[in-house]
Image 1 (tube, rainbow, N blue to C red):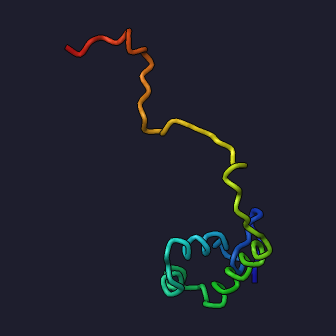
Image 2 (image 1 turned 30 degrees about the vertical axis):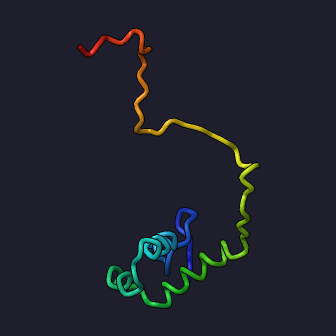
Length: 94
């Protein structure tokens, strides 16, 4: 049975969000791993969590965006270094 806590669906009135169960699967955890981590959890709870998540997104369609219509945004790479001093004003390294 799903109930809600702070607007997030949770499993059987416990403080385990459906989102967290989905995240564990996305991270590669198996149902056995999840059940070992949460001894009170039952296989039916995992199934109900995934079924609930599927109902939320099952009707959505993903359509490719044509490359011509995609916005072209260029940003510097976060690790790139852009000097704030123009090259002509830099001290020489010799």
